[in-house]
Image 1 (cartoon, rainbow, N blue to C red):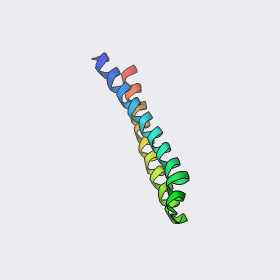
Image 2 (tube, rainbow, N blue to C red):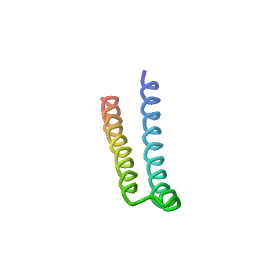
Image 3 (cartoon, rainbow, N blue to C red):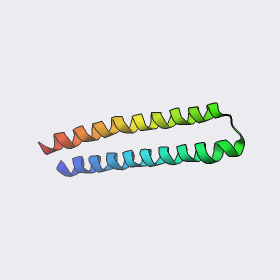
Length: 75
């Protein structure tokens, strides 16, 4: 049973890391490359910022869940 829990914890950790990395890469790409290349107005930059913020909030919630999973598995 411990091996299954360890696998679930590792899977969730990888998921969180991919969400954080993907969110930041998409945010940088949209804000610094795609937006100016297409000539989008500044209000779209705010939209990209809010989308990145939503991704970070999602990752934060999952980090708390991961922390609780690890705490429960220790004792």
